Image (cartoon, rainbow, N blue to C red; front, side):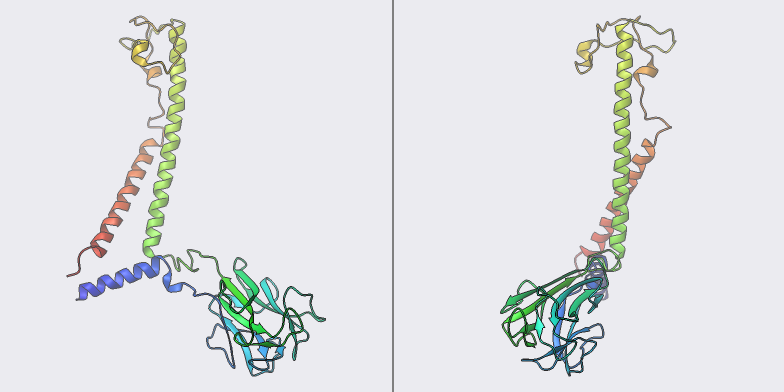
Length: 306
């Protein structure tokens, strides 16, 4: 029984830590009440009543009711920085309301949704009957688009709708909250594998270039029928039919006198001066580490519960 509980706990930590589910935000949520329901909620508008009401800026309101919003980190009611205007008031208090698309009333007493994260996405629009496609309904208007009384989200058919989201990051956004142990290990291994593959690819490309250069040197030597006095000579040169037609060699003759040094023929960057052996070793090590991680995961999670 204890083993089963341990497996369930580890599995939960894996999903909540690696994928950040524990820190996932449900989305923007707004409501009308006499006080905020959660410590992170923010007042965005004052209401004289739940319906047929006048409005007030949140900082100037003396009304019992206010509209509060929460559910997203960094939320605010500022009309600067990253924000969207959702209503424009005829005065700071005891005001009629018009939509954000209308010109400001004198004094520009506007009400806004904002987020301290400059990359957060904020959307505001006006819909009939419901806020389908948005996170929440902020309020409703008795008429549209201007000089309206206002009410809570259920008071009138014309809704003020809004959504807000924060970018997903590995440091604590909607996913990857805190990163997670398994996520970090997998990311490290993946980075190592990709780096090793890239390095090996560069060496292979370099090998190809030097191989072609060596072949060209051999071709020139054969075409001019030059010989080397070096004691290290090949026993013979293969015929064109043996080599194939990929290289444009001229008048290749099979002759012990027509020879090329082994140094020229075997020219290659795969020497102790290159990174090739180290890169291959790094690639193999990274792949083995990945398989080890998978093996440990299977041992923990795939074994049948007893």
